[in-house]
Image 1 (cartoon, one colour):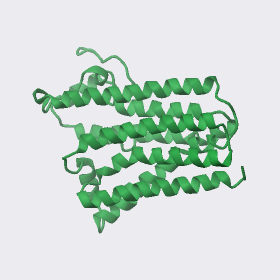
Image 2: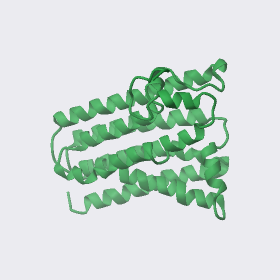
Image 3: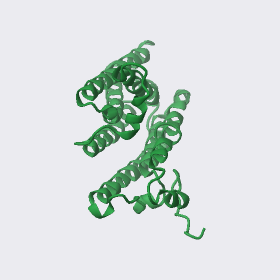
Image 4: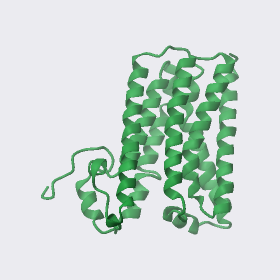
Length: 267
């Protein structure tokens, strides 16, 4: 492995993620629905993980077992997320959150979306995937920390998947139209999908931590957690749900992010 291999990997990852985002942008313009970027979000991570695994393996760098384990875990997570969001949005119009955001666009709303939605999210994908990239070029066999990371990833993946499935079943029942989902995992946290996402990326960071060098990528899971809680995740969705019948009571008794038993009605 040469000293330029990690930098080449970073450049290739940026190019692959950029291609995913530009393709999504083309679909967004054609469909008139820029919420397709939410599908590209998961696929961008898949592209980053697989391109890193291929390049690192070809250069003989790192531990192939760790590299391909990270690629496999990221791919399973990213493909499931993209498929879930794509199926959920099929036949629907623009997401109201994107409608409000793009209504304030100065000039051409499509070009504005390209700059502040697609390219920004692409940059975040490259940043958040840094633990996968660094781990692929550092030595160190899999150990107990990697096992812990897989368990954390699995807990997050199951939390997110089960939460999404519960919400989908709830919404599919016409009797629930206009009602707030407050059952299953949604009784313990208002955002089981976002909480699961955070666990997934902390798990991947632990799997990647076969060397002290990976500590320099600690901002990656921190940024993902911030996005899910204070960025475009929990905060925006809570603002969107305010005013819905039953939301205020649901928010009062249910944790915003970290799961816990719901508060009693008289509590």
